[in-house]
Image 1 (tube, rainbow, N blue to C red):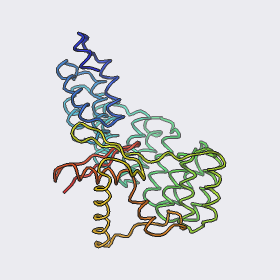
Image 2 (cartoon, rainbow, N blue to C red):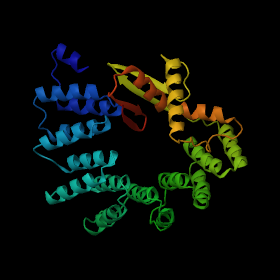
Image 3 (tube, one colour):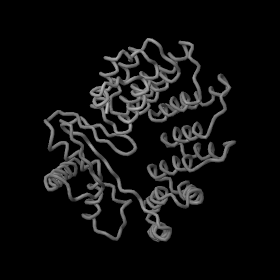
Image 4 (tube, helix red, strand yellow):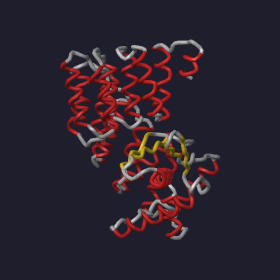
Amino acid sequence: MISRMRTEGVTPDMATMLSILPVCSLLAAKRQGKEIHGCIFKLGLESDVPVGNVLIEMYSKCGSLRNSFQVFKLMKTKDVVTWTALISACGMYGEGKKAVRAFGEMEAAGIVPDHVAFVAIIFACSHSGLVEEGLNYFHRMKKDYKIEPRIEHYACVVDLLSRSALLDKAEDFILSMPLKPDSSIWGALLSACRMSGDTEIAERVSERIIELNPDDTGYYVLVSNIYAALGKWDQVRSIRKSIKARGLKKDPGCSWMEIQNKVYVFGTGTKFFEQFEEVNKLLGMLAGLMAKEGYIANLQFVLHDIDEDEKRDILCGHSERLAIAFGLLNTKPGTPLQVMKIFGFVRIATL
């Protein structure tokens, strides 16, 4: 579109860039994003703070924290949005200590953090296991900056505690909240229960979350997985019947990747795409190598009324696995693979 604008004599401006860069972020289109960045440089727009802020976000969502830092360092003027974008980028990559350092530098520069900045830093601490630091930021936002915590801040703290397996503390924190906990808060705790195997809390939370979200298929599936892990297959069937009775459907997983300027899309369980036989053969070979190294697939969340081989086929048919295998077949050894998903990206460095 920008090429067409220039062909027709229309010069893109800052508004154009602020409109198109978020699209690159959404699609994780790094190549196109870098082309836009080059256009920004030629037009002399790189010094505009809003453009720099969006570039930091774009690169982080396209799998390049290094490029985000480069843009940040080149910006002569930085506002709270700039710092928040960098802190969020660090959080996405599990670089909690870098996020904490950036937050401190922001304060030292005299920039006052807002409620979004606190969401970003607590999120970053959550994804790096920095429990004490995350709790400290939560308390500081009200004590030092008079910012009243919102539901998203409470959700981040629950996630912070849950990811560190402090499930009792997370549940107590939820029950002591001055705000009514929503599904995102209970959902964070429920996901952690599934990972840690805490069945007691899981059953309590399952009831609450279904009451709050009677029409959300995702939560039904999550609760179903909890009961499957407990071996309570009657409850699993009951939940699946409820899903069917309500006419709910779970959207299948979807991943995509770009190879040589062409985008390839893969859906969970997809069996009809280019090179399917080769991909399936490679996945089988990799599964064999993993088994030799002692890896055992976790089959407990797959319905028990199908055989073990079928369960393994289901697990190996995840969209990102299909994409990774396809990428391995179609790139040179050592090429980094970037698999995009609806909720983010998976980055793999190949051997």
